[in-house]
Image (cartoon, rainbow, N blue to C red; front, side, top):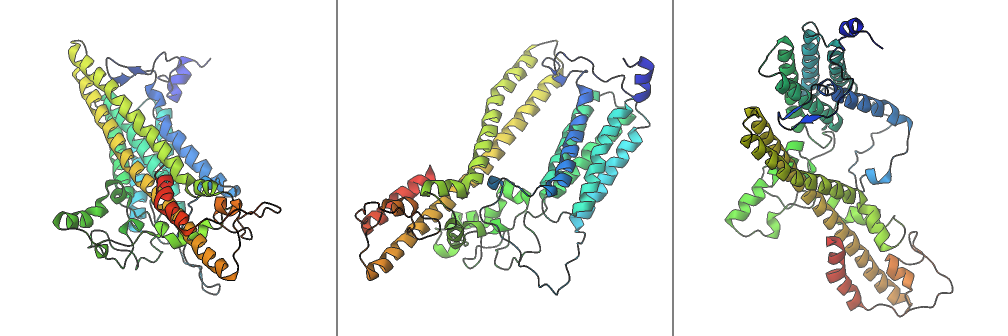
Length: 427
């Protein structure tokens, strides 16, 4: 067993040994025994990000559902040309300065608190954040750093609320840590989600009038514009004035264009259903996950409302309890609304892409029937109807000895386009 003197020397006198419950519903605060664990959460996130960054390159395997089906890639430079040097964007420099300020605030707090081990763990998170900025020099939205800064913001906010109104010297460091983390999150939200080295001359600029010759601005957005859907403002304003026509709408985004989808879709093997699921499984996973988060946030609202009313009726409950439950209810509603927006966008992407993939497959089938019909009146097998491709295609099947079936009429194919394709895409 560790003696009390040694625990005080290491700053572990407040470290929990037993914790019967985590949350006090009357006081609306975490139990004292659980508070020392909260600063370790950002440290765990930082260690996980650091390990995934260093170990992931050693393993070339990546689950196929995590890979985008259609991805815009940069043109390969000429072999004789020198490699482009990494530069420091302004947002990257700002993130590095903020991370150093957060680390400096924690180092100052180490001289004014007895729980030095907790300050060391929190400082580790800022060190990892600074190291990731220096190593990666992110030009696009760094989602790993966003998760790390968010955990730091939540951790510092909880510690500050627990110490309020008894402000101490280490509380000032906690406030500075929360403010620096919030500022870093604001910078990340305004960083582009698309690589700035990719050409953008074919993409319409955000907040400009829609141009039918250019692609949709959603190909080049910041995370904040994507979350708030503010890039739709010009189209909404124009639609409020008059009826929209074809020349008032942008072209489809890069990953929505049917030619690119069809080229990738033809490379898949199996039946139509299996190919559609294979091409859109990342969207299906995201929509399912977002639906669960939205459902959890919706169900938490009446629970928080019940606690709010109970704290208002209880004369022994502090005033801060009602305020905290009201803030938690607001946060739950914001999470539910934001996940609903994300779910709507990914559901729309899944619908548009699956519809385009199946329609282009049927168009290819119709054109192939015309060409084959000019050569010979060849009957069509069931395998062609199931896969949408001829038996000699790399993704098709060739069943020998199978009985030939009567070929489908042109009206049957058109009926598939008008009805079944939309039905499958919507489901």
